Image (cartoon, rainbow, N blue to C red; front, side):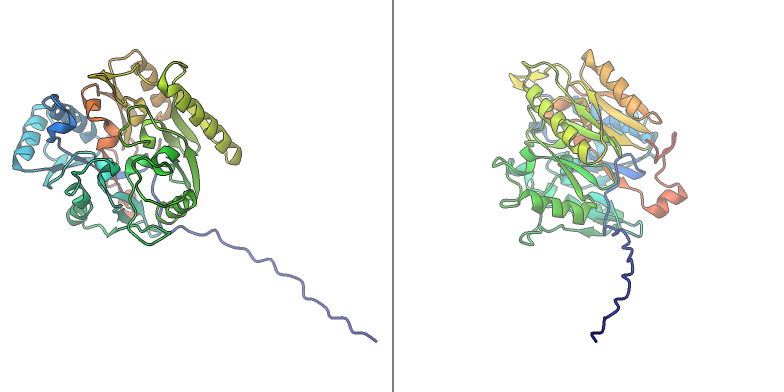
Length: 382
């Protein structure tokens, strides 16, 4: 008589969700400080450098009521200029700090390290390799800014590696946009075309693996092209920004004769496709009318706003759409003040508010103590 083997019932094994090694907080999460570099490089604003430090002084004045501002100064003359102009704008000396750090350009969104949180809530600096956007040759000093910020802050710094070959990975903060909850937006124009190549040979899946490992972002939304006139060749921060975990603010051009129309229509289509996978609400803001200088169209965009503790700074362009954009952004961030900063001169440097700032996230312990919190409004809420 054959014997039957009695199989034990299978036990259900519950698998705990994997905790990412790092998480890049959303920009609206609490900051310890904002980092900028004081302008000094005249070729960035050919023939128009003179008004730019005054614009910076206004930016610091607007930010300093909400969080500390850390300012890199190329040399002693630059530091003295910063101190004089900030004093003229009535900015208190206890709200900012000047640091002598030599630099090539002021665009710290791209040259400064990206702050992330470790599982224990401590801040870590991701010091991507910087190669002048694979376009400009003078970037040697900017490539050292990560080490300088490590020295000033005492925060640990790492140099992310490419997943395909282990070499140091080139990336810029203006090209990545996260919601702090596992999603990231980037453009194909920036990372997957043959122009201004950052990491030759890296594929879309390689980038997605790196975003997961270093930013805690396992869901990548690939948009198409960036804004017309963007010399970075496709940074996301001129076209699409998260305002909550499930809401994107998209710069959209309805005029079919405008070069930005086809680009923004394609990006809208891609966001709608992404929303089928996981809920995503899209809010549109306009572009200003084209801002031209010496026959060149500049990358003027309201999407280049900066979210700080309790406040959102928005570039404005003496345009009727200024009001439309400010109102839409105010609705997206109802618990923050929204302040317009005149940026017609600033954008001659091919960047505005988001390009020139870099947030230092508050650690979990600092957030609990209230350090880095808004001086006027709640820090973590939208």
